[in-house]
Image 1 (tube, rainbow, N blue to C red):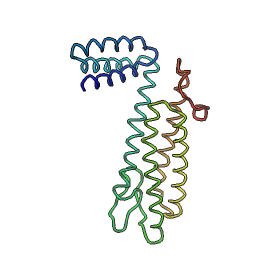
Image 2: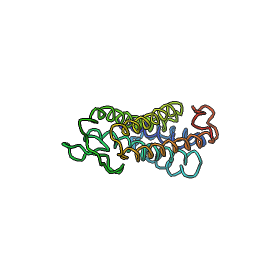
Image 3: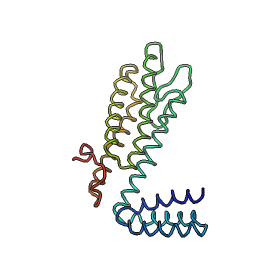
Image 4: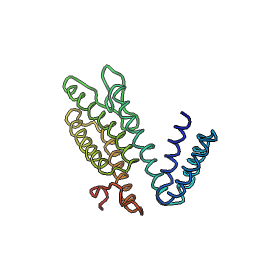
Length: 218
């Protein structure tokens, strides 16, 4: 079990080294086998991972990898989790007349209550919010995998969801702008993803990587 965990950490370390340091990664993998025989696979693998992360800022692909992990793990996943949790807590953006103030923190101050006239829109708004949260999680994974074709697909879906949410919130809750900050935030996220794709396309030695002209074009 410990050896299997060490192998997984080693694979992560080699991936962090990138193509420019592939020879170093192969040497690490060979030394790992000796460390596994000696009964120290986990310690050796953790040391290799730490060394790979320390080396990341010194070369362009490493800096790209750090930026992509920051976007995926530090922005996309937390926002996706926040959107999903907001639905479980009641519903975002709105003050419910009999449900307290279950709204999404940091994305506007709710003003309008749900009533008999607009309550019909709640299931659709909740569904759009769940889809947006799940899309964030999927996009985070695909960004780390550098699968820009599917990232582009999720990006278009996210844009369509934002437009739909703005339209329906304007119809069912006129005058309430609480969905607007979320829309701006997702637009900024998509711009960051586009910037990351352009950066990826400029990296050397990535001819076999999956790209998407629709995201990387100016």
